[in-house]
Image 1 (cartoon, rainbow, N blue to C red):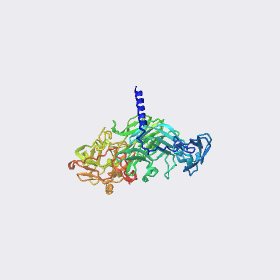
Image 2 (image 1 turned 45 degrees about the vertical axis):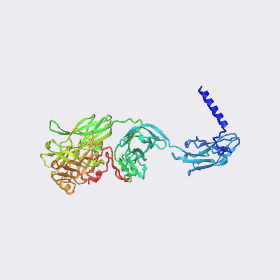
Image 3 (image 1 turned 30 degrees about the vertical axis):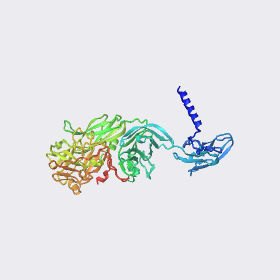
Image 4 (image 1 turned 90 degrees about the vertical axis):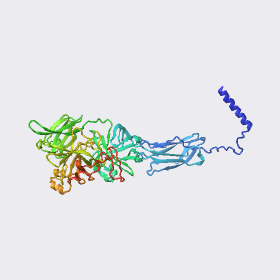
Length: 610
């Protein structure tokens, strides 16, 4: 019924149109049909690829050319355009159709030995015969042609960027021609279609005019990490060599293979980039370990972790004194050797344990170890972990030992002092903080003070787990000579992933290690002062250090201050920094960036002990 109604309606409308003579159209609007194309109407198909992938195994490829009229044989001239100074390609300037054929092929020959990998050449072929082209077909075929670099997949690598907070399994490829080249396929979520390409250099390679001496240095091009919403631009990872101030091999050592296989192939490597926003500034991570780690596919990780901590003093039944170490062995360490040395310089101690020139105690499981120690002073535990007979890991910890013969001092609380930190905050790129901390004075030695847990819960930058809360830690200040105030080596109990954080004054360091007297360091102008109300230190006269790194110059602003409780003003509000974000950028490409955690921009060891 419905179809019949529609049909009847259409017939009625047609009759009306015929009777009316189509009067709706003007007599002046004459329809003009498009002219029929002349000639053979030669054209390129619009389905031809814009990129041709060539093979190193071949020497030619074909481009298809078509025509509409095919009755007669036909030759058409071609116009060739290609940027080819190496004379790689040879392209005919005429294409011929046999009679009766509507398709022919243009054979392009090339020399594969002259083609650089990933160097795609722009080529265009134009039908140079207007009489035999058509407005309805393509007269020009423009395309790129080249040989892609030969990459083979090694499987899924474990990729972790601890700074950017990215971790995933990513395909890792190796270059088949240059086996030192690798690339991770899209390690960052925002730029999943881009890859991070890097090379592992053998010692003796030349990079940026520097001849390397270290086996397995890792170099790489700039790579996009993420888009920073605050600064509205892309954060890139740059190799340290991009900075003129870091253009030496010594500045690249945190970009290196950290584990090789038995046959010398990379298994684990680390990358330490300079994270940068071009034209603005960035965050310097070039001198920190394990910022980015890449674990190659099929690598079975061994747990060679090793930790040592000072566990206190032990006195046996015969009144012999010992320093106790708590040693924790990784699952794959079968044993460890531990020694105790006087002082804080443990640079050669591990080698001495390995070659047997330093007496040590061997253990085969985690636990406490007691080593003879009876004289008060600064000491270092040095541990070497073994898998069988092979040394795998080293660990150290510095501690202050107080002999029982010194008698246990009595400390009286003076109340809450107001403390301004100019040690930890500036070292990590943060600011100064002023807050209240309990202060005590030695009952037997007036002027010998100590702050109670100054870098524990009270420290504004701390988060739970950033400090050891199993016992109290003190910052002891010797102000018995008001013009010669100094700080002995102290463990603060703070650990942000770099190991235990220690504080030492430059004056105490020189007295302990350079044989200077208190009067001599006072004359050097590096002691603190105590006016009865406040304790202060000169700029850069305090040292901050880690067991395997330092000391670094602290108190860079000269703002370290302890205000005694009786004179203490109201505490100043802490700055709104956090350890995971930086809030200030520098303008210079070589300037020090600001990232709160793991930023080392202060003076090196060699500069502070002179």
